Image 1 (cartoon, rainbow, N blue to C red):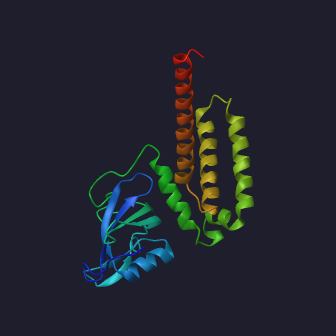
Image 2: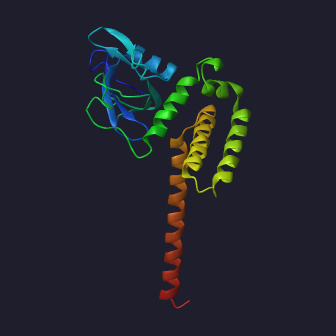
Image 3: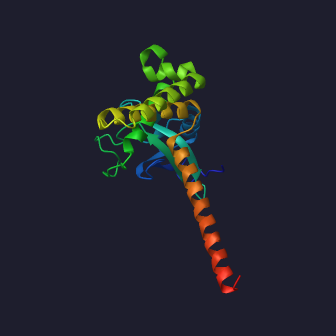
Length: 218
């Protein structure tokens, strides 16, 4: 990644976008040190022009921005940082620094994903999530299997509350398993999208073949 830090005297603008919702969260500036720390820690880090020092977003509020990808623009003088926020991004308490609501129908799953990621570096006795992550993929996978069975058993139960409770347990443990594999629901969504596109193309090819048969009387 060839970047031009010279245009703004050692700084480069960084536009932060929610990796799940595509909503623009905020804009900051990075110098080389801030960018390097962002890459090393996985937490968005800026250079404060007021304080003249680097700072990690969320170091006070704990609403960190967890990096998923960093992309340079065509001129190499601006960065697009795709990240998952742990909570409201703006110091005012708003979801974004542009006073926009950053949510979708399944927005809390994104929030939960950020919480699970934040537990990776905590001691096991501080949270159930941290304990699970520390136990490893095999143990987490077993829990996913157990929760799946419990959901199946509740499927014919007319009590929606119990059924939804088991569904929530399954989704949570699945997200923990994804985190243990350094994956996310976004990756699952991308896989589903590829499958949908492939199936749609196959349907189109089949329809074209049928039209060809009709046209040529085959």
